[in-house]
Image 1: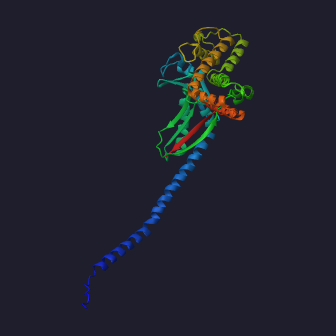
Image 2 (image 1 turned 120 degrees about the vertical axis):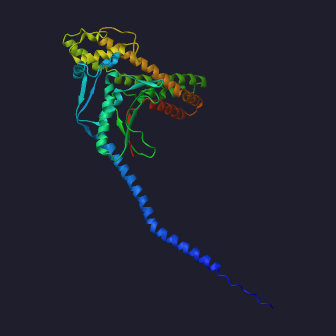
Image 3 (image 1 turned 60 degrees about the vertical axis):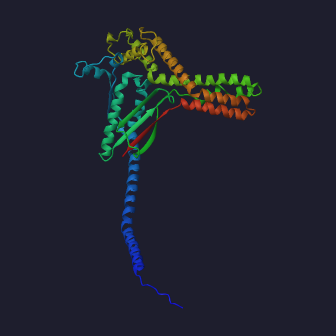
Length: 390
């Protein structure tokens, strides 16, 4: 038998040794570099956590810190569209009469006040202040916030603070504060809520009364057509009640009727009932009364948003009441129209389900769900403040 002859070839051993040597190099490199990579990730995570902690502390500190001195100017001439040159001799007496100064108030108070004073209507890409006598408040609010954040960040971070408020969800009446540059998508963000100091608020119990349990129980065995018609009327009443209550809240903010009445009582006691809203040039000595007349002038001017048809009349309680009711009526109609456009499709669907329901508890649950939705649209009594840093 012929013996097999093996040829000696050491190339395979060389290739294997090269591969083993390469793996050893990778192991050594990994051993050297891995701690550095892990450390970098740990440093990044620690830096992000530190930024989060700082942002949380900074926002809390801002909202709870006192403003030593906060001053803004009520500019009634803005109502008439009159502007005064910066170096005019009229400026000093105007500042003396209409400047407002507050001390030892928190930034949270200041932001909440700004949300109320600077409500604006947004229409066709532009906005108009409802209460133009306090326009300077927004500028001063932004300035004070920026000054505080500049001191606290010390140039280590960029920042952006934003606060928005809508009395009615998606309604074109809103206010905002925006301070700082637009934040990048990876900025650290923290938010907090501020409760607004409102006395007039919508009550869920009052909304439920428009379509109460008694009504549902009385209709339970009625025809579907009767149920459908009655439920439709009841939900319309719910929207009317919600819009009326909210209109009163807005009117309380933009037209201080009680304050005006108190001024009139004081003025009457001083026998100075000789001012007319059509003639603010009479120059009464009481700056508060001048402010009152400018408020009435603006509200009674039919060219303005909430104007009524009267453009002149005696400054008295009757005139205050007339304008107050006109503003409420105007707001109620606008808000009701908005709620109907937003909610009517869902309400119609709910009414159809309620009409065919054979279980009274199910009917009540359907009612509750829709009333809660209406209620949620008109009960925004807080402002969300968001602080971003990067």
